[in-house]
Length: 246
Image 1 (tube, helix red, strand yellow):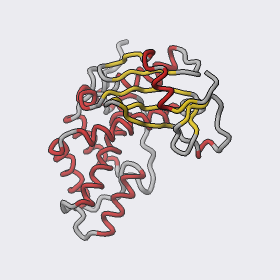
Image 2 (spheres, one colour):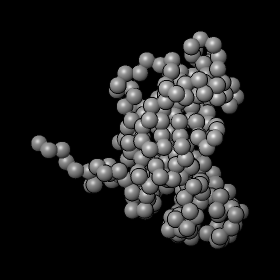
Image 3 (tube, rainbow, N blue to C red):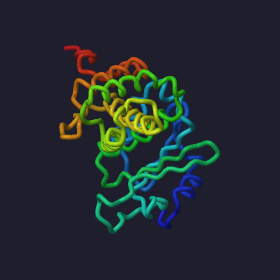
Image 4 (tube, rainbow, N blue to C red):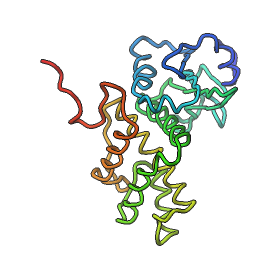
């Protein structure tokens, strides 16, 4: 393929070649020389790490891997790298058609950890939105308790900013309000992203001035582990992992 195609045209052209993965998820890649290990790292490992509950909540999803994306919103598939700085590139695009969500990821020159984060962040946001609000009531109680105790920091940049704005504008930020709900939604998605990523891979949470304390983070992860669950054989905490047979 040498001509430029929009992500929509690209997905439509190769729809029949999509490979079913698990239930509602399928994928296709083009313009990439992926061996079995590459496909395992980029596709099979992250999809296999999704808990049954997460898979059930997801809509029909097509994952498309391409070398590069161009355009302000990544709307065009490109075989050659855009002539812009790496940090300014668009690495993913999303659109919906006939109930099917098409997620297009540019993976050439992209760190696998960054790709995994984008993948799980997208999945987590959809689960946070599609689950019944009452499902997250227990998680929101954890957030309210943190706010009452003025626990510093959060999981990621988005949740930190939302929390900082909430606290700066309210003397009782734990009170049920539109702004609290907005923060809770972001904090839920950010924490679920970390949870899913942790099920898939051994990752380290880098300490920093905006990072929530590990004991507070663990409370969130314990709740997710109990309520969202994990695929059989997957663990989020080191003590849950079975030692390898000698």
